[in-house]
Amino acid sequence: MQIRRLPVETGSAAWNELLEPAAPAVSLASDIVADYLIIGAGFAGLAAARRLTQLDTNARIVVLDALRVGEGAAGRNSGFMIDLPHELSSADYATTLENDRRQIALNRKAIAFSCEACAEYKLSPEVFDECGKYNGAAAEKAHNHNIEYARHLDELGESYRILGADEMRALTGSRFYKSGLFTPGTVLIQPAGFVRGLAHGMSNRISLFENSPVTRLERANGNWLAKTNAGSVLARKVIIATNGHIESFGHFKRQVFHVMLYASMTRALSEHEDAATGEKKWGITPSDPAATTLRKFSGYGGTRIITRNRMSYVPSLSISDNHLNSIAKHHQAAFSKRYPELDHVEQEHVWSGRLCLSRNSAPAFGQLEEGLYAACCQNGLGTTKGTLAGIAAAEFACEGETELVRDMLEQGVPTKLPPAPLDTIGANAFMRWAEFKARREM
Ligand SMILES: Cc1cc2nc3c(=O)[nH]c(=O)nc-3n(C[C@H](O)[C@H](O)[C@H](O)COP(=O)(O)OP(=O)(O)OC[C@H]3O[C@@H](n4cnc5c(N)ncnc54)[C@H](O)[C@@H]3O)c2cc1C
Image (cartoon, protein in one colour):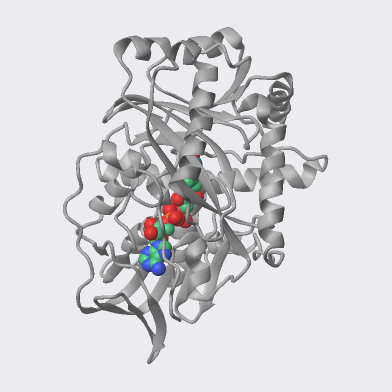
């Protein structure tokens, strides 16, 4: 299989730029042999690598990524590693509660795995902060949604706290939010610090080659041969952890798609601006997922606010500078709405990144052919679900159908997308409609 479409990123990898520069990249430049090859060094690929080091202690494990670790989607997200599903509501409580409990348990398994890795690799608390998150509500409809969500949390026996406008103001310094719902199980990660920290922590156990896109993958005498422009890896088993790019490998064609998400990060705030934006750090997801996520981060690179909103379906994955500049204006507007007195604070960075979805929210997971496994298409909560898919794919490759593998397989297979251009028209119309409905929370 010739792989023609490779990842393209637009805008700065801001989280990565806040960190100390990474050591020079090592790219694949020869023909090597491994027991396991992992393609993709995001959440899924790195979790798979770590799980393999636990299950097969002497194995030769190679990881290849097209980019540098921290420059792709894994280093471009808002860093909410969330334990609870975005939606918890259905009339059919008996099955829903059971499913929700199962999903929450799986998400927490992934978070615990990441927590253990951070402890073992001695990553700083700024990289993995177990501080929970707030679901912010600006309008009545969103507040009611939070109340409904809280009712469901009661049914599940999950803890939470409802905050009024004054408490939200004390937290954020903004009068924008009328209420909030705090849940304690989310971890806020510095996403680039997290993936780089994992890769570095495993450096004595895995061979990582960056800037080494796989351009061909083929069967070779019962093994798999992956080629890059300057070398190759011959491996017994291969895990594809490239998220939506799995389509380029000839699998899940027209079953998964990438949605572009966008975020901006302010320059470092002054002491006064820091004080005017409430507590030192917090993370607010919108009670309607189509609206604005806002996060205050204090650590490497100072204290900054990150704004994420807007999404679009762009099959080419190529975002023009003009488009990105127009998105930056939406971010500045959302920031100014929350902090009118700080609207002189510039957004120093703006970027886009990919989120992979399927129509029926099923992951692109499983054994594709003998010795070839997929851990792709995370469908939102990608930091958590990517980690889970990576752990499961490693178990599949080493041990066969473990309980976790069965849990993943039971989530089904992505269904077919409508033909082009209906997919583009339909997806973008749906997103504009979702954003319109969420306009009070933007
Ligand atoms: C702005 C933004 C905000 C987000 N916020 C959140 C959030 O707060 N919480 C959350 O859970 N999720 C969030 N996400 C989504 C999350 O980042 C993704 O779901 C997650 O990164 C998926 O992890 P992954 O390992 O499956 O894929 P990725 O992180 O995309 O990793 C796949 C890797 O495969 C590599 N690759 C692809 N093709 C090849 C090839 N041919 N050869 C070699 N390597 C290849 C890529 O370079 C990439 O590094 C956000 C995304 C964006 C863009």
